[in-house]
Every structure is written in C-alpha cells, then in structure tokens.
Length: 89
Image (cartoon, rainbow, N blue to C red; front, side):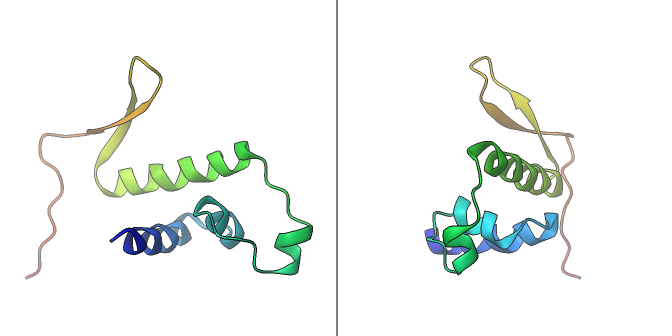
C-alpha cells in the first residue's frame, strides 16, 4: 500500500508541473542522473514550497481547505457541507 501512495504522489505532482527531480527527492529516492548527483542543490525551503503546492492541489481537488491548528500544524477541513460526488453513470 505504501508503494501505491508513493506512485500516486509522483503522478499527482505532474498536475502542478513539479520537476521530476524534486518529486524524487521529496520521496527519498537517490539521485539517478549525473546532473542530479553533482549539480543540483535544493534547499529544504524549495522542497517545502513544492510539497505545499502539491498538497494544496490535492486538497482543492478533494474539496478540502487547509486551516492552521493552534500549534501551527496544517489541518485539512471540509469546505462545504455537500462535498462533490463522483458518478459512474
């Protein structure tokens, strides 16, 4: 199941046009290309920016918004009483 979540995260990251190397680094993969190994340096703030962008897109698609908890953590909450439904007919 965890592998499926990683695969879904990588696929969904394409919707926000996140660079492949950033996605791989967020997922904890080792750099595979020469440029990634030797020439790309990404500070944690850059990775956080992309992670928040991906997270925001996923929450928007799910009809959720992000609120801040008293401790500063992000908490997802439902935007409306009637969440969107998906039909198969």
